[in-house]
Image 1 (cartoon, rainbow, N blue to C red):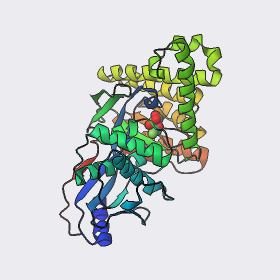
Image 2 (spheres, helix red, strand yellow):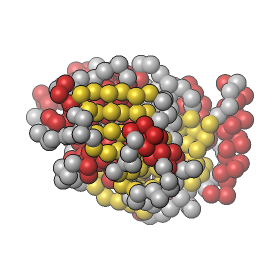
Image 3 (cartoon, helix red, strand yellow):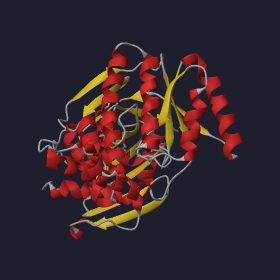
Image 4 (tube, rainbow, N blue to C red):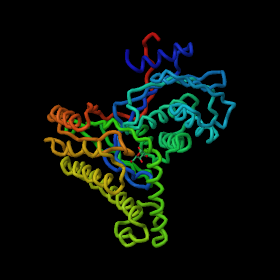
Length: 393
Ligand code: GAF
């Protein structure tokens, strides 16, 4: 039985009716452009074939009834309890956060039932939380005919993450989950919200993810701290250059000129972000030119900046990148996502994938004494409603 069918079946068993809607919401990779989104910069993500399925239907009970298929836990809230508040279950908060954001926009969310479950590994930096938020955002939009466009749904989901998960994330993950297209990476300008798709041929470069297996408790607080340090940098630069509203608007010359006022730590954070924005643009030009080795060099440089200046890597991620660097057929590798654990992204020439995986597995196990989990990712379309399954559930 497919996972979508299992989720639909679980819905029917639990709520005694067939779901009105089935939705698929993907996780994402980011080729390059890390920690740039909340600085008004560029990112280059794509949705992947790790996904979460939702079965949903309205109910006449005035209740939000949520069931996690993976955790086999249910959470129930009465709509009259509005404004909704975050509760004790982390997974439920993503869903409640989306509902609350829709309500805050004055949209009449009715009672609904939802079962969801998926294959996006948690804490692997593949944006399982954004997929949960975006899948429900699209589902409720369809169920109650709100007529919101996908960009607005991404913003609803982002705000849910801020307010119900306490992470002041940028827009990248939610944007990628909702607006990706199959076989393409998308360059989003997080200042203007303009975006452009670039074909990405996984026949020419396979996307292989190596999961460090590290999940750092401090990841969320360190993430918010990085964002705060960038804001401190902007506040200093703004005093000298009033047009600078975000690090996107600043130059390396400006941060060099005010290194003393910024202090070494904030200076290095700013330097990384400005350089990373440049790297995204260079990488896109290389992609257009079909120069994968040059594209890959930008990934290595991105990793060095994340490790040394932004300080969001960890020894396991650094090891994975160093191991990849010497494997034949690897164009580039780097840590991906917020950092402090999760996956590295590796671009590997197709004929070399098996050898790559063998070398990485052996090297990682020799160093850390545990097996390395790896995934080969395809680039797929963003969140979609599925045609109703015909299986008897
Ligand atoms: C996390 C955040 F959710 C994104 O918004 C982004 O900042 C990323 O870390 C780092 O690039 O995934």
